Amino acid sequence: MVSRNIESTSKVPTFHVIREVYDSSNAHERFEAELDKALEAKLDFIVIEPPRLGDETGRWIWVGNCLHKTAVATGVVSLVASLLWRDRPIIAAPACALSIFCTGLYTVSWNYDPCCQYQVENNDTVLEKLPLTDVSSPVILGYSPNSKTKYLHRSVSLLSAALCAWQIWRSYK
Image (tube, rainbow, N blue to C red; front, side):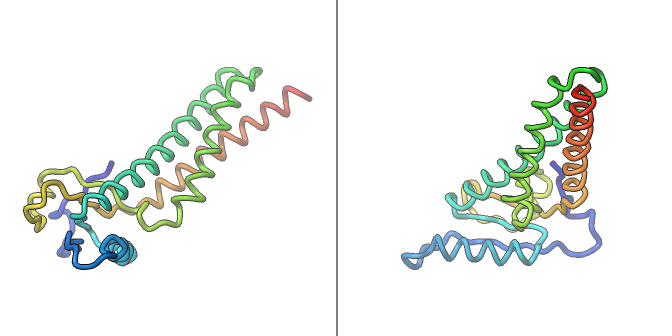
């Protein structure tokens, strides 16, 4: 995970705090709408005080990260297996299939979600500089553009699929 440092940029970091204030019966929907607006504004940091929304958002980001890492790792395993065992596509094919599946699922579910450009912030030096209240454990999201990692992710999966398909074609030729 990439941690952002507040001093690393020349501009003042932008942030938004979603306060845990239950003033109506639809407070959770209001929290979600506030989070959506903050995500679309691409603020540097978003502090989520409501525990339910923070947990849901943290889990969503964690699952997206897991899919991304699984796609890259299995794609690399498939590439290495294809290069080591050129005459045995059966070894590389399952890893390639898993990589393509994870890439497809990530692309459909996470690619266009503005939440995928945020990571849960755990860096204590960054957290100390944010205006946190006495809430026991808010979830802090830090903005980190991920276009390069998405291209790496897709490239590894597609290269793995191409090499695996070529290997299968060659073995049946």
